Image (cartoon, rainbow, N blue to C red):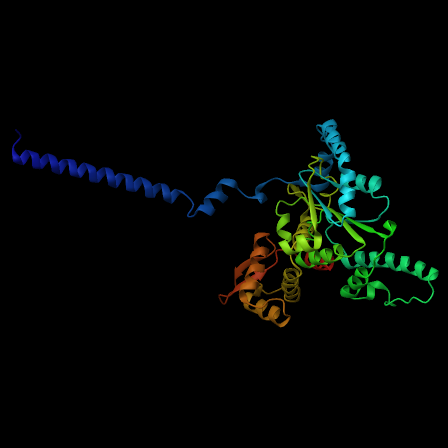
Length: 379
């Protein structure tokens, strides 16, 4: 049996070894942490790099290269698209019953819908809305529909003397509510009097705001109007609440994946691997802004106008932007403004820097000429 002193010495030695091992582990851990970026976001950015680090090519060169890529599975794609022709008769029946048709699924549905319209909707007057365009004058489209019914009503009045119209001004000068009221009064048993709105990408950047969707929903309620539309955005169903879907659009959903390339739809979107200097940056910013709400666009315009008028300043103080936006009834609280600024920052539309007096200032990272052009195109 070991003496008591020897056991105590061994225990002390074992304890010191454990302490040294633990201290060594701690030193290794903190040394490793010092070599890592300070946060998860920074680690992710360090690992992923930045888009600006890439050697980008000219947009025209990139588009030309993309055009040279041979398409794949053409025969299978054509066969799939042709297979939907068997459903045309059923789609027409649902339109006659007052439902709207909403086509979803991967691939461009432009050719499919236009073939359906040209071969089956021959009794309708078809009006096409290209929702993938950066901007759309929706009121002008609705005024065009009203003018068509107006012409039909005039021809009927010639055959029925004594009837009078309730609208005398041109439709573009009428309010939206007046035009909708006129459309809702149009009733006829004649199939040839019906209009079909064919909307490519009803979830496009120019149509996805609440105001445009409510406008289209009201038009779809008119007795003589039917709607056939396509959607491609994964979050498109969030555009409509249950009331709008069931009582206004009355969608009948069809899953019709075509796997066809989005050649036409993507022409107006800048390629992420293309470089075009200020012109490309302006185009990218315009696409982003047009996907935001009108209020967000107006807030951006306030900031842009301030920057153009005060080019030598470091930026516009957030407090000043809030005051001006409140005066113009663009925001109701600081929280609302912050939500807009978050969108701007997420899309690199604005940069935040500290003013010499310590205030947070906002600046749009565009030269004056590019910023003026952006405001002109934004309208």
